[in-house]
Amino acid sequence: MQLIINGEPRQVDEGLTIAGLLGLMQLDTARVAVERNRDVVPREQFSSIELLEEDCLEIVQFVGGG
Image 1: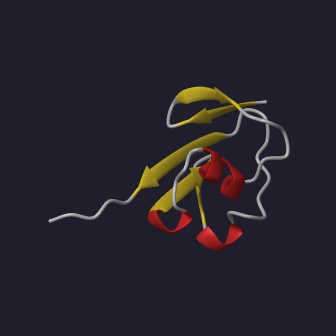
Image 2 (image 1 turned 60 degrees about the vertical axis):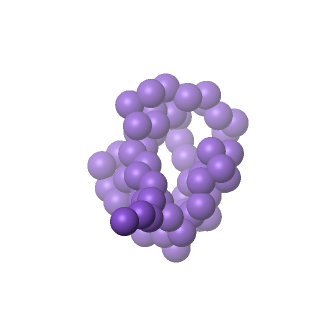
Image 3 (image 1 turned 90 degrees about the vertical axis):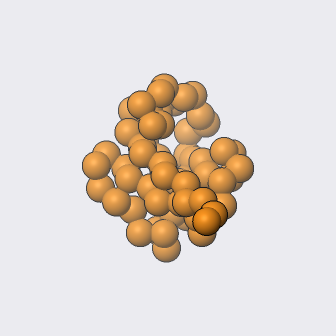
């Protein structure tokens, strides 16, 4: 199925959760914020929300530094 991630189309397997997607992208779930179809997703729901065809995701990764 196709998702739109940060404005770019991406093909992924059906049944993928947000946590699964972040794992595929090698992103640490503790260091990201995710918006799905314009709604911010609480981190504790990453493993329970199954993504659907044409979902639009904005993923922001926090980085440290000084």
